[in-house]
Picture 1 (cartoon, one colour):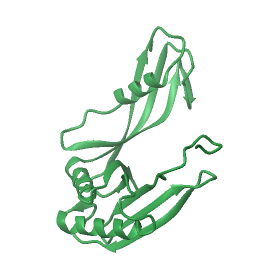
Picture 2: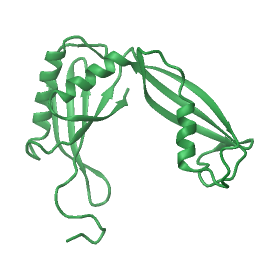
Picture 3: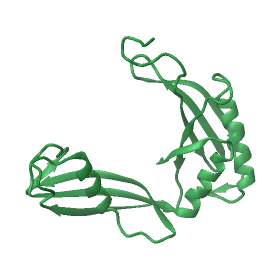
Picture 4: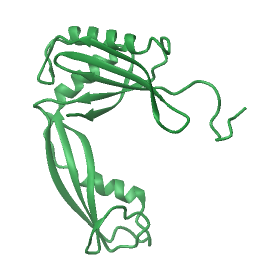
Length: 196
């Protein structure tokens, strides 16, 4: 039997965030409330060891801290309720740059599609060395047939579309170690998220 809004009753969806810092590891478990807001259900804060300036130096110590933090944060929902986590990344290994890319005659169709915008964003990715990974590619703005500051060109007809994007890069080994530290607790990493 479903609710009036069409969502099925049953297993709730929980959202988990993990921040691995130099002094502490923090975890938050939340769910979406009836008004669409996030309701925090549990937090876990434990002392961190094995991290210096955003880089993991002792994976076993960090894995133990992440496990303790996650266990503390999910006391309210019980074990096994977490399906994945968003993991915060920061540190001196993070770099940012802006890029631009242009597509002429984006297709034989009259409307720019979300798929074409996705392809345009991917083409704006810079060439990165094997030692780096793209953490985020954020569109700053679009230019459509010379008209600048277009926020969302989906559905517009165009002969030329340009995107300016803000790219966040991180050291691939550091990012993989962060993922490894969380996944050792049998929680998959849904995404890495830059935080200040």
